[in-house]
Image 1 (tube, helix red, strand yellow):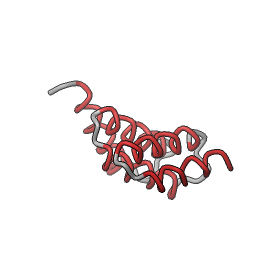
Image 2 (cartoon, rainbow, N blue to C red):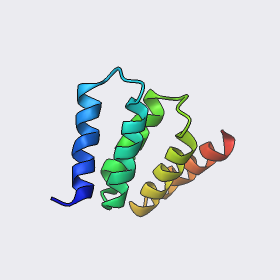
Image 3 (cartoon, rainbow, N blue to C red):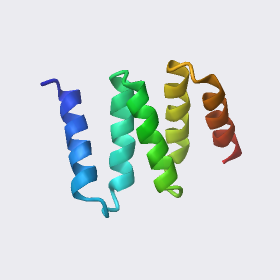
Length: 91
């Protein structure tokens, strides 16, 4: 199994097993980035969106918004990507 697939399994396991952990936003952010790296843009969009919705004060949300916009662009979701980039600029 390639190492990057192992990262996905670890992030998913952390998210499921420790839903109240202070590191939960970091695990979701890592999962979304790993999904993007594997070109699984649809999953990446969902994970970034959950992160942003569930953890609005997470320090890495600007990076997550940029990642979300990039994944949306890859999926040709241009209006959504524009909104994500506008939200990034606004925040």
